[in-house]
Amino acid sequence: MNHWLIAPILLPLLCGAMLMTASRSPVRLVRILSASSVFLLLLCAIYLVMQAVSGEIQVYALGNWSAPFGIALVLDRLSAFMLLVTAVLAVFVTLYALRGDDRRGRYFHALLQFQLAGINGAFLTGDLFNLFVFFEILLIASYALLLHGLGPARIRAALHYVVLNLIGSGLFLIAAGLFYGIAGTLNMADLARFVAQAEGDQLYLLEAAGALLILVFGLKAAFLPLHFWLPRAYASATAPVAALFAIMTKVGLYSILRFSTLVFGEQAGAASGLGSSVLWILALLTMALAALGAFAASSLTSLLAYLVLVSVGTLLAGIAVGTEAAISATLYYLVHSTWVIAGLFLLADIIAKQRGELGSSFKVGPRLFNPYLLGGCFFAAAIAVAGLPPFSGFFGKILLLKAVSGDAAWQLWSVVLVAGLIGVIGLSRAGSLLFWRHHAAESKAAAMDKVAFLITVLLLLSSPLLVVFAQPVISYTEATAAQLLDVPSYLQALRLEEAL
Amino acid sequence: MELLVALAIGVLTFSGVYLILRARTFSVALGLTLFSYAVNLFLFVMGRLHTGKPAVLSEASSYTDPVPQALVLTAIVIGFAMTAFVLILALRAHTELGSDHVDGAEKARPSGEIKKALAKMKQQKRKRTGATR
Image (cartoon, rainbow over all chains, first blue to last red):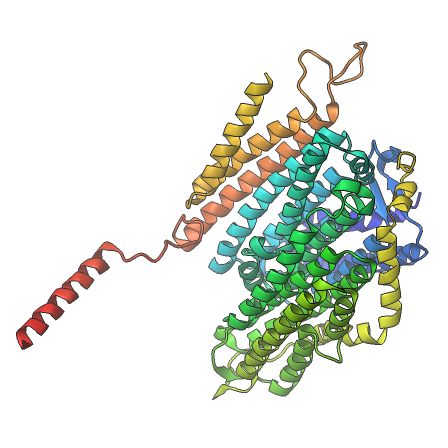
């Protein structure tokens, strides 16, 4: 048993607990502790990816209780991949927060660590109820992080976010209870085995429970009828928090992907592909409406929040198709969208700081200090996020469009291309207003924080790097997709294969 | 007993959902509490209903399922903490936004004074047009 599997959960949890007690100690100590924790987390994630590359699925039985009875952590290619995406994002977010944003509330670093523990746990666990617990950990931390810095706008957004997610938690428990009541197990692999054999009334109840779960994950992922909380929450959050939240919608999408391939995958017989036709329509509608929202946004941060929604729609479309090529393309697009949108949130903060009281709202303001530098950076990032060549967004979309065939192809092509066009118009409107139209007066705000800008640029550089290193990344995502669809070997790793 | 428990869960969920859909934060918080009671009961019942059977290993030949009980404990702890958090958040929202509406502000309906002023303006206009005629 490889004990490193639990390190991505324990490390931030311990560090967070230490930071809670150290809230009165000097700022430098807190910052060093937090930064070293995320760097160690990054090393740990790299090690786990190297472990997962071989294709062997590793299982960590907590308390040494074997699979269906105890809680199992499972490391496959997908989990390792998501851990790495999170860890890289966490490093940049923490470094950016060290430039001053962490002083706006007392427990920022502790909450960040708890949030990371929750996210990593959700990616690693192989148990449904354990997934609920990790969801709660990451949600509770996110409630407090969203409120970081306070102010009426944040409180208003947080109230909606908290109430909606509490209802979601209740529904999650009902679904978990139904699964347990029918199947008598909460282990996801064991559930897969049970669902494959279920028939009659049992099957209907299991499908109802599965649909409830997709609803709950959809609330986290924020696709169409469940997305109303997102624009306001992301637009009002502090910049590092908004950047970290770029991974939050992906936790929901990850859970949908995991569930739809493992429990309701091809081997599930009558229940296979549960809800994928509905998800497909919702994905297309999400993309279209989010693009319109981006077009009508009244500030740069809310424009970015709607772009998060566009990426959610695109990713969900890939998951709904569910073929090997589509899942691989989805994963490639997932890395790109997480890192680039997080970078854009940080960049928006730097721009907003130079505009003084106007912030990132689309009103003609004073001249920026570094219009060419910031403008050039925004231009490149906008191209990347809108999905134009030569950056990674373009290749992600091309891969996804190529993976879809038949009737679905023209639907996806038209929606993705039109949504992309509307997004480009929205972004160019934002850019021309922020950088080209200004009063004669110079800005009275403080000069640019060069280190923060460097951190942002490094995060945005991930987009060209994803293009340069596309070959290894895509071969990894292809192997991941193949492994996801190979459910019997997953069951074998947990020693549950006999009955299937 | 099954019918009674099912009815209890149903009534609790019904009242919870009704209260959650109200516009005031306090009734939403109450609704969330009722809903979490319903969920906890439901989880508990998923281990099937038994009377007088032990949940831990002893000399008895049949047991109640201990797993749902453990799950319910976890759910109760989390639900309780979250209720406290929602109440604090609602109080904070009330002091900061000056309203206990869930959207932070009342819907922009013309208030009584504005209505009166509008009616007055209309009357004056009518008078003026009447005078020119």
